[in-house]
Length: 518
Image (cartoon, rainbow, N blue to C red; front, top):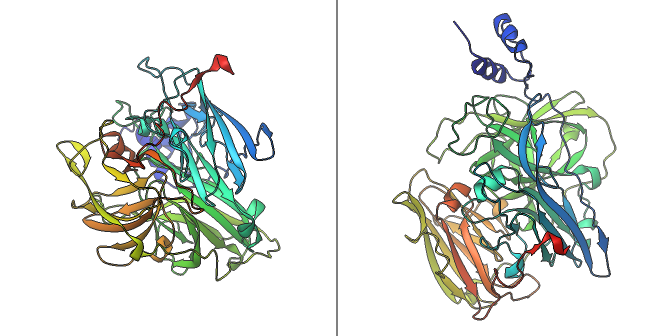
């Protein structure tokens, strides 16, 4: 049977970590001058920390250049990415509650393949920002312009920043415009959780590569290099992380455009081994009140844009053990055939002392009182006439779908009447607490504050929202609500609400400025 180069690569990929190819395929591959990648061959990479360019008594000032660059994601291939400071994911920002940030984003992306300007919008997802700094979809930063975004850092949690340009969010995030942003406080630092090198962000992405190494976006007419999408962890395909036999804290972000996960730890590469534990200590809104143990074959469900913090205790495993972070997929989607697929592996390679622990009480939080609810609203998410709609309407910049009074507490009900369709619902500025899903309590790890709400197949989800920050600030202005399945968002599944009556206009208040003014 004649085997073309694409099929050879697919077979190599399916071979797992050891590329044991037939001689005919080995000869074929050797003729290509391109190297192949086996799973778990490439070392894990931590996210580089971004330091301030200067600081004063209250504020740290950062600078990020948004630019194209070439990255060797698949060994032997160069891939064009659009990155913050030229890397994808972008650099990690760690901030302290009580200090403010000003982040200058400078757009040097130029034009796309269609010779159109690549505008950008930056949304710090999870931060209660003023409207002009929130990343409103039409508050563009054009090429050769910059904008200084101001952030209060009053929400202690694992956040992330990403592009949010109207109708092209999927493309821009897929090309690499995402990064992680962490806010900490003294209370959390005093807990005996793993710290320093043992507090590790993990950004999950899913990409498809063409035979020339370029990224395939949407329906590009390109031949695929691999049989399926490639999972990247911090920009590395099927990363291999060497760990000590001690506890680690992992801050996991689902940064994909349209991939849902069911995560579990396993000793087996192709199946789940029973009893391996992910100890969930936090979600979108930071630490939850008490740890939640996810024992395989139980899994941790993770929609796009959700963040979960887990502790893995590697002290249970002898040196030489390999474990896998597995994805089993979601059975409620249209595709019921997702097998167990490893996303990365951990190799226990050394012995180290460990004085960390997971306390039984993490961060107490106050439940929003239902007795204080002043209003209820319902929003139905469904596909209609080739578009993705909310309450039968697609995005319209001139339409406001809800007006809320600052400080009010409301219940918003999200309805998904369709089978096999999923919607991670995200509200800007406001956090909420899940009341129930189809009348049943949320998963224990969904307790506390969240800003992304998994709306599953044929589900009705009730969320109580407080339109003020945790410290009582009452922001006013225009904000967005949308599905974080970016294909849905870019095709109309987004609306806007206004807090207050005379709030700040997000587009005209602090517009981008030409680079020549720097």
